[in-house]
Image (cartoon, rainbow, N blue to C red; front, side, top):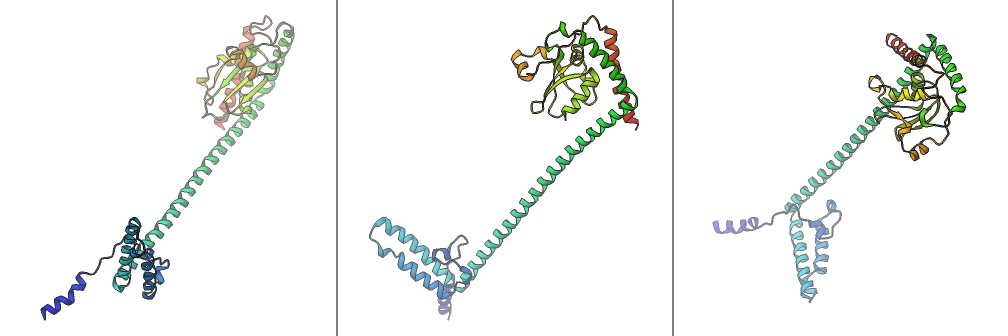
Length: 304
């Protein structure tokens, strides 16, 4: 009895193991493995075994290739014709498909989340820039209104008219010169527009004749109606200014060819800072008036 029992258990101990990495259905040429039956598997095995049997070729290299393929085909048939082994292998395939599907869904969710986050960041940055520009425009309008209400524009107009009359008398004494021009530069982080630059420099230093604004290069060539205005702009201490930190220098310090490219339109003839008809006291008075008006507007802006 014991001998007979051991003989019956021998096939169980020699039953082949399922290789999780094996491609049994693929080796037999079965595409739809979920619906593969015992009859389908047997038919596929016979076809592949007949096609790749080593006895079909005489060439040694080809024979070795066929022997390898025939071995894979035989292994696949052995696993799939056994219902228990086939069930184990089918479970491995189902688990692999489930993991692959989960990974694809996770990748899709991650992609959507990343795109959504990037879009929110972009919109937030755009809204921030719009708000900063809107605030700056509103501030400029309010400051202009406060200066107008305080009568500052009338005083500025009178000062500018007197300066124009004096400079007109000196028109024949002075040729076209870069003494009225300054080059203004600013950092990339500063939000500078042509209008804000024109308003600021005309208020602080006097009437502007021509402006060549180069936003991509973050620089601007300003031609004042007087050389004294240009000199004041170049000597102004921008470190003390609360909003803008410009670098300003006279255009005369630039290379001649560079100056021609920056400002091709001739500037109007103006009087020199040391004009005999303009006293230092008058220049200082005009300059101080502009500063007082700017400070008055800023003070009212803070208290409102």
